[in-house]
Length: 90
Image 1: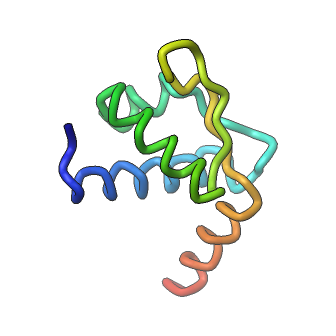
Image 2 (image 1 turned 30 degrees about the vertical axis):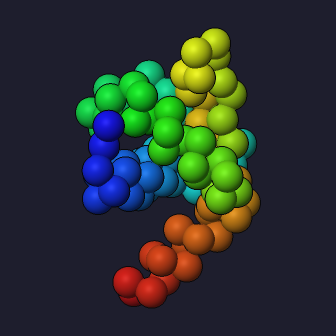
């Protein structure tokens, strides 16, 4: 099981990857397999991170059997959060 630091890192990395890959378009998503492979996140930790982000209202997830994320998409709230962070950085 991942440490708290790792879990936070996974969630942040997933959000940034979704935003960059979809260019902030909430109608586009990324497959769970691509996130897992591209970000090198263990399957169980990817599922936990996605479940957390769903609970925060930042992403939506289409789940397969066994709680495997099939497709992950940013919500409007998730996009607004990332845009606000981008504006803060300048």
